[in-house]
Image (tube, rainbow, N blue to C red; front, side):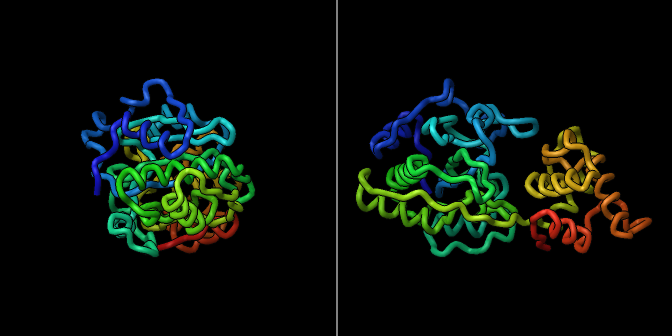
Length: 307
């Protein structure tokens, strides 16, 4: 565990690693500490994400409905370079697996399987969002990837960590698939960077398709809680978004009602329609997901289901 870097220390460490750093206006005091009443730190590692979009630097700074910014400490564009967005607590990790966090703290390798979401990763992990569609086909330019390696190495070097303090979001939170490249390769490049300094050469990684996972028990909790909660209440963002996207493709949910992470009444109604389409009726078609119906939806739309 370590004390988080100050804004000035962050700038110093990143530039010393060979990075050109761009500063988003206001980033030095932009965080979620006061709003949540939770201070950032101690820190145990760094987390790598892809944005699943394009030109989303501003979005990562300000956030979106139900999820205020910053959504990461830094954003790395395909051609726009590295931008610092926040210093302090950021909304990038969400609930993650405590066993994985403890492994990062102890620098254990390989990381354990992320089969729970039982601790707040925003408390203790630095986050980098890499601009990429995340579809397993969108390439990572060599220079963009090199900067990601340098960013991770700079923070590891600042805290005396090895590459074993680096993880991908897909390794710490069930259902996540980011980043869409091999994290073992990325950690090897960070290790080489830590050993050789800023002149190490890296090659662009090949994007690797990965199927996201939906946790049935967490989805059921969202389906029971979100409809009666305040507008925009989010219980299980990742899984709900995957299910809503599938229901949109099935023609059962309007696109404008999907993507906010809340399993609201319209989503529940749409899921009930899916259950009836499968032949269920009565209480078996109440909009609360079950294993069989969810697996069939996932099989058609590219996600797996875990209990």
